[in-house]
Image 1 (tube, helix red, strand yellow):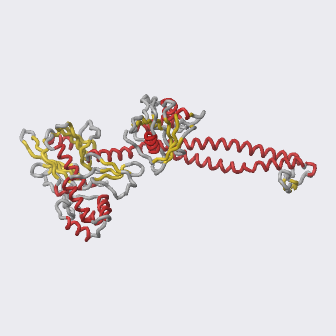
Image 2: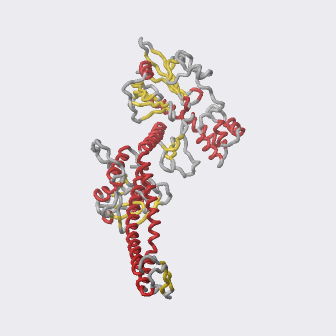
Image 3: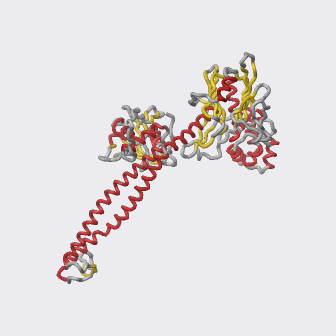
Length: 563
């Protein structure tokens, strides 16, 4: 997840093509280490995001960013000096992770002046520095005085100095043989690539070494040099197996050999917007759902322990027939038993060979009362077995429901979906209803909708309540209903709309059902499908629980199609 030098080069070229010649229309500072510049271009307004902490980066962004009502002092200074300024050029000094935006502005007395904004993307040392035409510092986001650094000081009115260069070779300025010799001298592996070439991240270094194993290092360096010089990179996003974004880069990634999904974008700005917005959304949803996850995990642990204890008690009831047999044998042999006996041996006429059975007795009560004691214990065991069976069935259904809610929670993509799950848990009694809280009047979320290649609408429930609504009320009886077999997941409906549903659409819908289930990381997931008229809800069943008959099963690899 490194915004490396070559990525900076690609972003610089993209920004130059879109912004040079445009004028600054607005500047705001959403956070201390974040700046947003709005430019007026012939194609419309464009925003440039400068983030100097928490994954530092700079790129054109289309994300909605809040504008604080009270601008900080630095923001007011930038507005004063750069408001209405024309962007003349964007350069990358020393081919490092530094962008220099050169502006033509007008000062307070109407004279034209040249100003430069240096944006340094250097991890925790990232900074933005505004200088005049002679490269003297006007102001900086992070001031560096003599107590912090003796080599590089960034204070107003002092000359601006670029960050110290690394002892590495820039791919465009160096010969291929020179780069290969440096890599070979350093060991020839991915760490050598990282140490030899300026502007590559660890993932790119691993990719070069991985590809070189099938050909040779010189071929790969030639290819990388041509890619950078010609600017024909491929904005690529690599996802983890759970669907969350893992890393981004400027080239096709092969080192994972298809084990991790990748997605290509039309622009680097779109790539970076998607990566960071998805990552921030996932982090935000994880933080906001932390209390629900804790509640669900505790409930799952409690129900699991309860079911295990009940099953252990149920095993003790398995020998209850022996209690009845002992009662029958005592009742049949009362005349042979002396009062006060501690045991008696009688023929067991329930056994094939009438094998004798020794029965322990309570000497303080009569033989008849001993027989009744065994009958009473038998009836208690029988009643307990029946009650335990019902309790286990109820607890198992509740555990399955909570696990399904946890699965839905893991796939929440918005706060509205999270709020719907909270409302469901509150309605089912797992969350307390807060006093003096007005009921939400928000419109219920619609189901997720996809379109198959054959033109059929595919509807996907977002939570258990919506699953019930979708299957039992929204869907028509001849629509097709799908659900992963014995795996927690959502209800999926293919809207027939009077047409015959082809196998290709069923396959697409099954892949979607698998992707919206707990088996989304598996290679082959069984998905059942049947007509909606074959699906019903048992009386008293928890939300999302249905039964179905006359179904078929298809095995698919989970896959989401474009909406």
